[in-house]
Length: 203
Image (cartoon, rainbow, N blue to C red; front, side):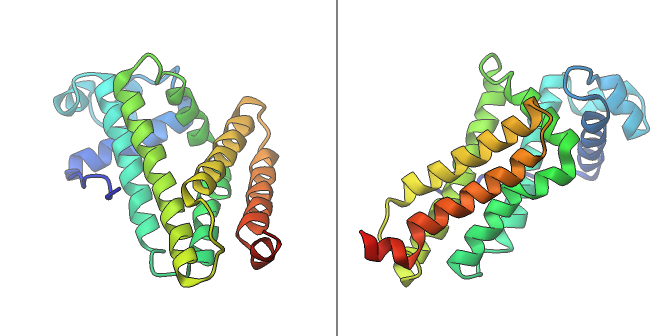
C-alpha cells in the first residue's frame, strides 16, 4: 500500500481546519455547526461556505487533514529501527490521544456516523488501512532484519490495531482514560509475547 494521496490545503483551508478542530473540542460532533466553526475562524458563515458548501463536506476535508497530519508525523520515524518504530506508532495510537481527549470523543462520534455516511466511512477506512499498513511494514522490516521472528505480520498488525481501537472506544464510552494505558500495556504484552526472541525459540 502506498501513502495516501497528498492533498494541498490553502492558507484559508488550514485556518478553517484549525477552527474546526477547536470547535469540535469545544462542542463535540453533535453540537457542531458551521456557525460555531465560523466563530472559531473569526469570520462569517458565508466565508466558510465559500470553501465548503455543507458541514459534511467540511468534516470530510477535516478527516483528510487529520490523516495527512498523522502521515507527516509517522514519516518522521521511518528510519528508526523496527522495534523503536513500532513502539512510537503504538504511543501515537494509545498514549498521545489522552492529551486530546475532546478530539478523541468527537472522532468517535464521527465514526458512529460512518455506517450511514459513505464519505465518512471511506475516510475512516483509509485511515485504518494506512495505520495498519504502517504497523505491518514495521513488523516486516523487523523480520527481514532479524529483530523479530517469522510471524504473520498482517495478523499481528491487525491485532494491535484492534487493541488500540478497543481501548480508545472504551476510554470515550466509559469516560475512562485509564483504558488507554491498559490498552498500551496490552499491546506491549502482545508484542513481547509474539515478537520477542523468546517467542521464536518457544515455537
